[in-house]
Image (cartoon, rainbow, N blue to C red; front, side, top):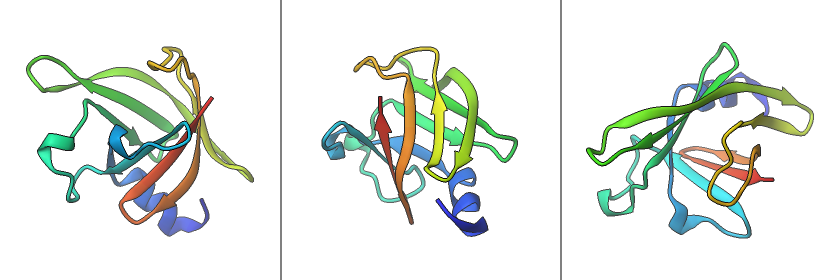
Length: 110
């Protein structure tokens, strides 16, 4: 990620995980305000804040998103990364953004 515009797009967007687009272990997220059909909307969202916070939301039985984890994200020469204390379904706890473009975010899970 580089530049103020990239940072604004990252923090100004609610990212929805579209697991049908995942490839090679990477998680693909799309802008939740974009054209993601309801039938493809999964139950996981990420929100990045300017204060360095990233929040993970999951939807429950009533389809309302509830915060399930919160941590800090950091930016270095290798990009943005964060660590969640609660492992995902694949056991990953470390996440690194490997691609960030208009309306699309790809995260490598470790």
